[in-house]
Every structure is written in C-alpha cells, then in structure tokens.
Image (cartoon, rainbow, N blue to C red; front, side, top):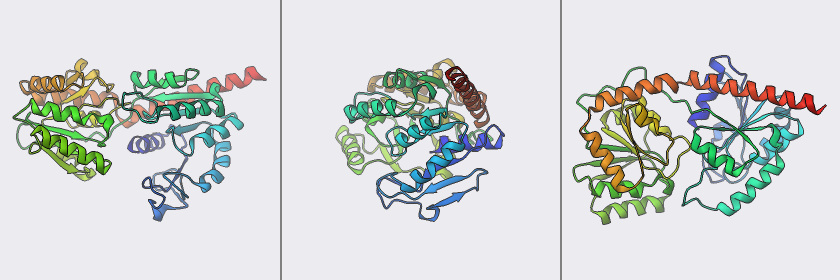
Length: 366
C-alpha cells in the first residue's frame, strides 16, 4: 500500500519515529501468490526493519507472523494497525491489550458504507468481536476524511478518531504538456470495482458525444467484461478505452495527456487518484461519495453527485474553463497540505498525544 510505505519512509527520514513493520510476503489473494524472494526476510533497505513473514494460506494467514508478533508488540511504544478484515487484526488487538499498548488503527476505508457493500452482516459480527478483543480505551481510529470518520464511528461508537490525510508523491515540476490540455480527453485511474461507480461514467459518456474516457486499472475479469459489455450496449465502446494497469513509470505521461480526471465513486475514504491528478496539474471531477469538497473551495475541479447527468454537466462546465489555471491551483493545494513531510508530522503528533493519553489512563488505574 503506497500510502503506508510513504508514511513509514517519511517518519523515518524526518526522524519523527523509529518504525518497525510486521507484514507477510503476500502478493495476492491466493496461497501461492508470494514475494518469494522476501519470504522470511528482515529487510532494512528503507532505513527501518520490515519483517516479511511467509504466509501459509489465503491472502495473509501466517504462523510466522503470529510467532513474531508478541515480542514486537511488547517492544513497541505504540502499535499502528492497518486494515480491518484481515488475518492479523484480531491477534494484534489481543496482544496490544495484553501488553497495555496504545493502538492507532487505520481502517483504510474498510468501514465505509455504500449501497453495494458486500457481506455487511458478517462484518458487523466481526466488528463486535474486534471490539471485545481490543481494549477500546487504548484504541484510536485514524481516518483520512470526515466521511470516513462518521462511518467508522458507526461501526465502533466507543472509539475516538483522528483525521490525518494520506500523503502523495508530488512531482518536483508541474506536468509538462506538449499542447494545451484537451478537455474532451477524460481519465479514470483506479481499481475496477463496483464501488467505483464506473457504470455512471459510461452513462455520462453517452451525454458527452465528443469525449473519450481512458481507463487505467484492473479488477475481477467478470466485472471488467461486464463494463465492456455495458459500454458496447450504450454505443460508446469506441470511446471507452481500456489500457490495463498503469505502470508507475508511465503515470506522469498519462496525466500529461489528460484533460480532466473523473472519479465517480460511490464511496472513498480518501481517493488517492484525486490527489495525484491535482499534483500533476490535472483538474478533477469527483463525486460527493469522495471526501473532496475542497475541489470547489480551491477552484481546481467540481464535486458533484455521481449521476450521469451531474458528471456530464460538470465535465462540460470545465470544458469552457482555463484548465491550465485550474490545474495550477490544484497543484498548489497539494504542495501546501499533502506532502509526505506534512502528513508524517501530523501522524507523529497523533502518536504522541495518544501515547500521553494512555499513560494518563494507566496512572489513574493504579
């Protein structure tokens, strides 16, 4: 996860925390999907130790992780837990409780609600079990937006929250364009998943006969096929262009070619592609399912309902604006609030404050 790696690196580089990472060698959901070269390795290339525990089954089941966890938990001043519905969650909460350790817990959007959310009943049972396993007095939820805060507290009403956004990689120079941005060239980058509401974007394209959408990402084959079929039935398949996963080294060029980035999601805890597009000077149209109302406040895009009509109207509105000036305002906003250094400083303050609160709790309990 890029946001987690960037945070760990920034905390280390800025001297704000001594970081140790405990993870697995997983490279996908199947048992055989492993980073085999890293299995069982303690890796310190980034300036802090990373324990790549060999997984035994599924996406992240690892007996090696269970073996290493108690010692590392006992040595930590504060435990930062990432994710919710994964194998390490309950063991981490249990050992943190045993050792009376503060926990900063980042759900990373797992607790957010939307109409198509799957297995909600099972997840409610899991949430209840997690609340019983952990010491709720010593758990602080880290969320990246007000919307994520509200949904997370609905799942865990006894916990407190701290809002710290994700950091992003901001290019040293604005994206260099060989020609003026073409507002008819729309861009989508992200996971191809029902929560991203790509069907709404296909329907919006019907209302934008002069536009194309360049889609970068991947998802379950059945869903990708269904999207292609929907585009064909809507008569826009020639303008709905799949490119597959976007390689990191090509990201700058893809943003340079884009006129407007469109993010129509039903729900996002952060929506990293919005920040990335703005950092490259690309205006954004994002749905109100994302926490990016600042697009309007900073004059660098539109924040609208994720209906086909609203998305199309927002795109057409930007087509008559100065996209270069709008993009420059977005980049300035990212430089002001979303650098890794800025985010690491905010997170370090969260750790320090939460640790002090837990120390006070311990003193009162004696």
